[in-house]
Figure (cartoon, rainbow, N blue to C red):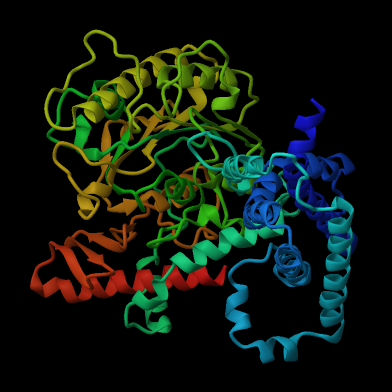
Length: 619
């Protein structure tokens, strides 16, 4: 036992060193920015030091990989040169980590968010940085840097890093490899499918508490990777920003105060059902594919169906930000992964919170995906639940619990909620590998994409069961249900996301508060997920002007169009046709506009891309 403890001591020292240093940084941040925590419970601040552990451990593991490799060699070749290299690497890492944090402490005064790749825009002109920085700011930066590096060196000496003195020298190699394996596992947060992300440290509804919880090194590293991957600057259309903004403003010019209401003025509850990967091409009431969605089709015959809705991109985290924040998508960017930006967006639930609505969200899988949990937390959802909150004993697929079990838990949560409320359920059975109970009679499709198609049939059956149970509840009569897909999917008729039709999805409003004269009706205005916010909020008699890029699809003079991003490209759909442009090949992979319309519609799509991008950069 004593030998084992001796053998693992170096690994513990490597990891513990960085974790302690991150906590030192938090304490310094608290000292300098203490006034920003006014009104925050001490228990919540104290909780940071526990909630941050997993992400701190992951970051410590990343930082320990190179020193451990040197340590392995040092264990074999005991000389001063390797000792010097080891200590040099440790101190260089310490200086880098301290520089990141000291920079963050300084910019937080102005930015009110953590240090990101935005800093590179300023560092490209370093003389400007020093000329614009006040003397006190420079003193704080360098003074704090000396303090952090000094404490870091003190901790290094305290840990007494040195090779193990083992009698059998060959043991150092396998032991070192075990250390490295542990670091790799810890660095990704474990052996689960989805690696750790910043949201693992999120737990508060206050942005500054979450910022304190996420260590600066991990956050900046993550932001830097996004910065390096993003080359959109090289692919922007040749259109002046002012001209682009003018065109975009004209497209978003509509009557925001109209009286075309399809909902009764009853302050209804709102239940969102986000349908994983539902494509309009497999929905009976929206396509030539019949028999897969009888329950949804029945709801559409009694509800209000939007026939020309499009997803803004191809992934769930982007779909969520578009639906709840009315935010359009641009290529290569998921704003949910950039908390310092997405926290500046409005959201449906935050708007309705002002008039007494509580907000709740449940997912049948892992909310860490795409930092969805982080986005929802930033936007103050009152309750979040995912696979960790499902009761034990249920059968679980590879990625998700089955839809029927999601709806069961969903109903239980709604029943316990005081009205008015927003409750959101995000399904998962229609996500690859299409996990659902393989019961007799459910294999309705035997042709192309049969696994996906049959999962849709199951998901539709689960919707029918959900609504039948919901109708028996007291809250049902004053509740509207919003069914919408998070994104499209390839099907028996659609093979590629390089087709605009790939992005066409269902959007259905259903429920007793829907006025009788609109039941069974359809809306043919072309729109996207980003238009749900303005449309719904106006129906709930709430202002929507702060949702800048969200159209009210029920406004009488609204423009009919949708913009979507795709893999290395973007597309535009209007009542005159559609087109899809690829950034790398610099050509249109799809163009269904005739020659007389293409130039003007192309101009609109370029203007929107430029406007969305400059807005994103400005956040």
